[in-house]
Structures are given as structure tokens and as C-alpha cells.
Image (cartoon, rainbow, N blue to C red):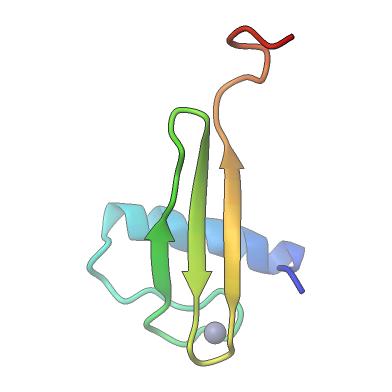
Length: 76
Ligand SMILES: [Zn+2]
């Protein structure tokens, strides 16, 4: 399971495109079928989480994008 490096890279491109135009139909990073389902489940300002799902190939992945620096705040 999981995404390959190429799929992850494509996923990040799709997420960037989706954020700039969320109403457009975006292609699946695995099978390139249009109509990828994207959901922003981010916990800002700590991290961004995006859920990607494709009915065509069964893709069901969550992409984690860390934000900021882990040294911020009051970690033990
Ligand atoms: Zn797909």
C-alpha cells in the first residue's frame, strides 16, 4: 500500500492545483482518471493532511505535509 515516490510527487502537484481551483476536475495521481476526490483534513498550523480517493483505481491515501519547525513551541 501507499504511494510510490512518483505518485507522491504527482499528488502534491494535484493538491496544489486543487487548492488554487477546488472546483475543477483533478486527475488521479495513480491512474490519471479525472474526478479525484480530495478532502482537506489539515490541522493547521501544525500540519496539512489531504485525503485522496479515486473510484477508478481504488486509491485511498492521506498525504501529510508538515508545517513549520518542530523546534517551535514548548516541546519537552
Ligand atoms: Zn485512480
